[in-house]
Structure formats: C-alpha cells, structure tokens
Image 1 (cartoon, rainbow, N blue to C red):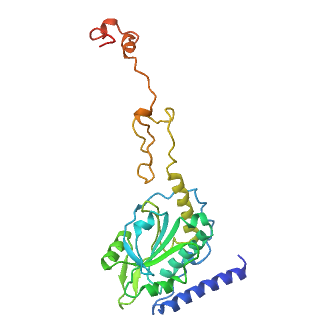
Image 2 (image 1 turned 90 degrees about the horizontal axis):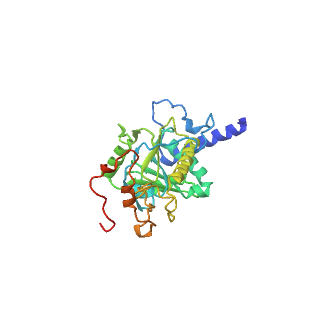
Image 3 (image 1 turned 45 degrees about the vertical axis):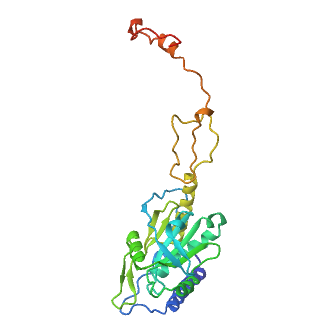
Length: 300
C-alpha cells in the first residue's frame, strides 16, 4: 500500500474513534495505557480464504430472545435467524475501549458495506447489535449511534433485550461475559460477534484478536454457499427407476420445504408375483422332498 493511501486510512480510523468518543461523551479510562490496535483496525496482512473452499460446521445452538429496536419495534432473534444469515454482536454505545464495541461496530459495518455491494447476498444477510446497557441505550441513543455505522442496502437492527431477565438470559446463553465497572458507569466485557445460520446455529464466533472485516465477509459468503448446497431439490414426479428404495426418502425432512419423493401405491406399476413358479423352481441342490408338504394349487 502506498504511503499516502496508508496515511489516509489511518486518518479515517482515528476520525472514527474520535467520532465514537464524541458521540458517547466518554473519555478513555484514566490510569490505563492505551492497548495496541486490534487487527480489525488495519489491513489483513494475508489473503483471506476463498469463500467456499472451507467449511463452517455448526458450533452450538443460538438462543432466542425478544428485543426492541431503535424505533421501538419488537423482534425475536429466531424469527430473524430463519430469514437467512445473521451477524449478531453485543455492544453498549458508551464503550470507551477502542478494541471493544467501537471495533465490533466498525468491522461489522465494513462487512455490511461489502455485502451491500452484492444485491443477491444483501437480501440474505441481516445484522443485529444488542446493547447490554438498557438504562442509557434508549431508542434515541441507539438511533444516533447507528447513524455512524449503518450501511445503505442492508438491514441492521440496533436494540436492547425486552427486560432485565431477558438480558441476563441471552448474555448467559451466548457466553457474553459482562460486569458493571466499579464506578457504576462502564462495563468490563469481552468482545463477542457471532455468525448464525438459518437454523439458529452458531457457525463462527469472533473475539478481538480474530475479528476482521475480510474474514467475516469470507465466512458470510462461505455460509451462503453452504446453505445453497443444503437446500432441498425441487420436488419432481418420481419414476420407478429413481425411487431410492422402499419407504419414504427422508433426505431434507427437517427443512420446511420438504416434499416426499415416494409415489402412492395406486400410482405404481406392478405385476402379480409368480409365487407358484418360485416354489416349483427349487434352488440348485435342494431335493424335491425338501418341500414342507404339497405345492398348493392356483385356487389355493
């Protein structure tokens, strides 16, 4: 990267941090040395993996929770998840740690901008940022904070859990540790961002040292490709040659769009079984008197 371009990028990052600090009205913690910039603030020093060349196996179930967004509208996480791919982050708008919530919102915003440039992908990805500071993160405060990060062309909800019990439950379920600071104002917490699929399963989890827009975008595209491969094939009229065997083929049964591949008995072509001929044609080496009684007549 040329020196001028690098200077411009760093200037932009500094401006963003100043904007966030100005927005929240919170200064850096006194008596603490500034931590080194997290990887997410700088260019990735290596090429990200090519989407689709690796797998993102499910890690665990993603919990449900009800929350209200910055307009006052109510949502449930599971309703959002089933629409496609979701990037979930936990924040609070007055976080003074550059490598905490500002980093999470900045990186997610860069990934959202990349997704927005692909209309086919933009309609499948949603972003959700939940605050764990409901006392101060009112709808108005969240709306003001969102102005600095939301990108046109993608949906990004900023909200707070419905009540204190819901907040505690969802933080525990996702392993998001949060402790109120000794001064009663700030929080001590670990950065957590989650990639969730359309079956409410966490497919990746990002912390400060692992969160980067290039990696997050590659994971989003990889998951999108995987979901296309997992989608059930359109239902078609089966023939006797394509039926996999007896019974109903249950592949894809867990998905809402499942359609049976079996044919009704009345639709199948069959011929009477020649049972008498099978009985009279004994296997080689088996004597005739091996039959247990006489061969029944056709009427029998």
